Length: 279
Image (cartoon, rainbow, N blue to C red; front, side, top):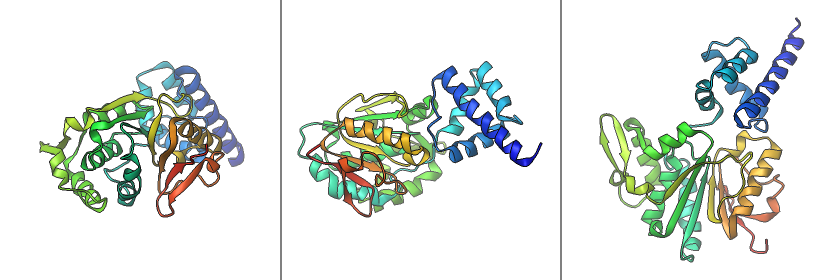
C-alpha cells in the first residue's frame, strides 16, 4: 500500500470512528477540528494498544467501560484557576460594574472541565459582593470531569500558580482563605459551589437551558470547526440577556463567526464581548 493510500484509509477510518461514537453513545465529535481530534485519538490509540482506528472502534463499541477513558482524550481538561489573569481582571473592572445593576444573576461556565474556571468566577463574585445573588451553571460533556469539578480538590503543587494568578487578577485577600490543605491536596471551600448546578450539556447537540447574564466559554471553540463554532456562539447569543457578556479564550475570536454582528468587543486586549442592545 502506498503512503497516500494509507493516509486515505486512515482518514476514512477516523470518519467512521467518529460516526460510530455518535450512533452508539450520542457523543458528537464530528464537528470538532479534524487535526485536533485526530491528534488526540492517535494518542488514545497508542496508549490503548490499538494499531488502527478500526481496532479502537471495535473496543469502544463492544465495551462501554472504554468510553470514559476515551472521553478523557477527546475532551480538554487542562486549565488553571484564574488562567490568563488579565481576563479575570477585565471582568472585575469592566463587566462587574454592569452586572451590579441586576437584582439577580446567572452565569454559564460552558465546558467547565475540572472546575478551575468555575471556582475562579465564584471567588471573584464573592470578592465583589455578588455571589449571594448569582446562580452558576457549570456544564461539560465529560461526566468524569464534572465529578472532579464538583469535588473541588486539586494537587497542592498547583496552588502556587493559582495564587499568583489570583493576585494578578486583582484578588482581594489571600487565595488560601478559600481552601484547606491536607495530604498533598487542596480542597476548596464547599460554600463556593453552593450556588452551582453541575450538568451534562453538549454545545454540539443540546439547546439553551436558561437565560444568563454572563457566558464564560474559554479554550473550547478553538477545538471546533467553523460550523460548530457558529452553532455554539448561536447558543450563547440565545442564552444571553440583552447586553449580556460573553468571554472566550485568548486564542479565540468572534471576528469571522456567523453571529459576529450580534456582539461588540468590550476590550481589545481581552476576548470579552457584549451582546448588542438592539438584538
